[in-house]
Image 1 (tube, rainbow, N blue to C red):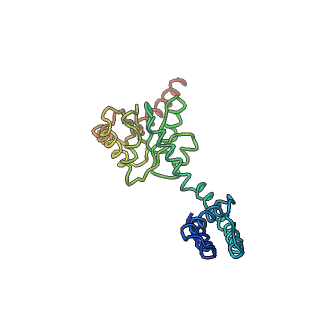
Image 2 (image 1 turned 45 degrees about the vertical axis):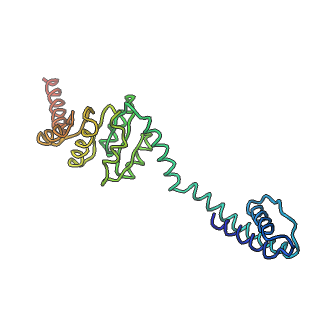
Image 3 (image 1 turned 60 degrees about the vertical axis):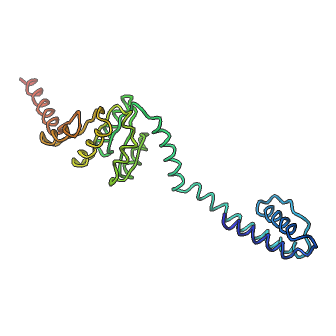
Length: 240
């Protein structure tokens, strides 16, 4: 745009300087600007030129072809660039988030988060994924989930955008227990009535999560132990 404006100014200035008519300067300036705009916009409705102006305009037309082509190619590249595409996607996501309600928020998209989100979606729930990692965000988007990507250092802002006030549940699945505890506490603060499910490593951690606001704390080792013993017991009983 700057190059096109510079070309317009140069064309108008050159036409005024080469105008040998007896017209007042304001008329010369207006005609020069008129012809310059027509040159840049390629409309082609020019005023009458003298010989020197015609030569000047030939050079200006060549410059217009070069600069105009460069400007159009750059503008096309900008409109289809990563930043613009990301901006469009963010605007689309913001519009979807404004209308989001009765959804399940899943924090994290590692192996556990992937299983939880996919099973919730298969069960008919609307799932919103919150992540702080670009790769996880791309994987979640590839699985057709709604995704909000934010900085791990400012994850409270991500939670505030997740419409926890209208959500029906939150599942925290990141592998960092301390991070899960902080997310649970903040989510409970934003919506004290929100059901929150989170994995815990042991009874002590379970108590911490419950004090932070978690309504369901799953101790993975207990579930695995119960499953192993249950399978073994059933097999022993079947053989006896």
